[in-house]
Image (tube, rainbow, N blue to C red; front, side):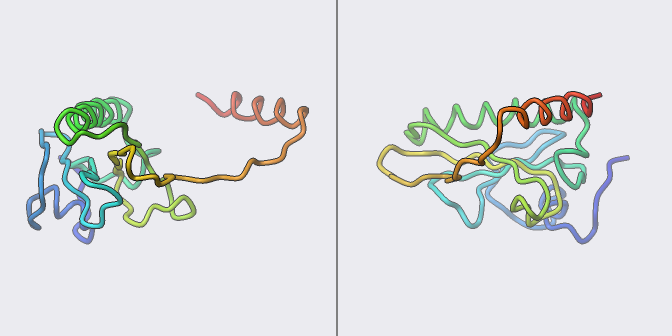
Length: 142
């Protein structure tokens, strides 16, 4: 039995309790136009089963989500004339996740838009700290 959260807007969308502009659907995911788009064709891909974020999503489903993202992004390039695209996932509130249901943004980009998606200033780090950070991450991978 798939998990759902009765208070989650994305679960309601996945169960067709709320209408939306669907661009793709199968038994595992639903993709629809973002109702607050950053560009023409901005699409969200959500899992039909409720997972709070990317860290909770099973690997096989995660793989499927990104295969669907690839199909949709290809369609954006061929049908909307997008010159490129960003694929974005925000994990947890500090990273900008506002809806606690795993989802991926596919944002078509157009050469004419002249907008920068994300702008970061470089993080200053010592060479020896690079090694420590890399070792920490390696140790945490199962």
